[in-house]
Length: 143
Image 1 (spheres, rainbow, N blue to C red):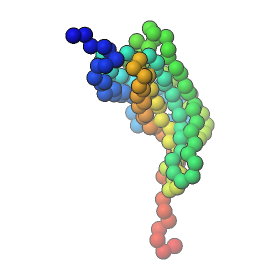
Image 2: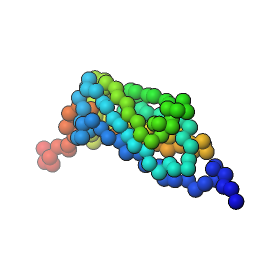
Image 3: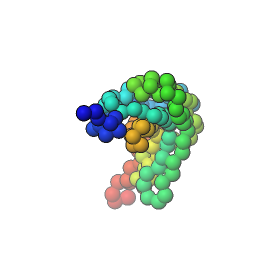
Image 4: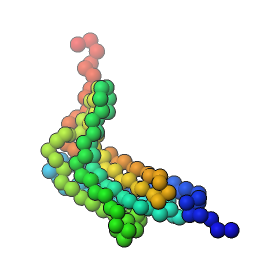
């Protein structure tokens, strides 16, 4: 009996991202260069791949999101290659800087998103730091 490729059991994709700076610490204006490896997609056809570098806020109030770099790969040949491994780079902006506050946090991350022919998608996020702002601390008690 033949199995329809759309009905196969769905794998568990894994995307490993390798940063040029092992500590994942960058300064504004630095070149962010990453490469990635995709595993666990055997038997599934990847239709589109997106790479992006974004910052977002977490905490109280509204959350913000900014896209610094975005690339969408739709060409079949390029998707076939990038569906196994890929790389991209961009120059980081002057702001916003990463910040670990008590109420609000600013985070930067690399996202790799896969869109499958079956209609499902998978996104993998990998956080890194921009700048050197120390984490916020509560003042000592009794002051």
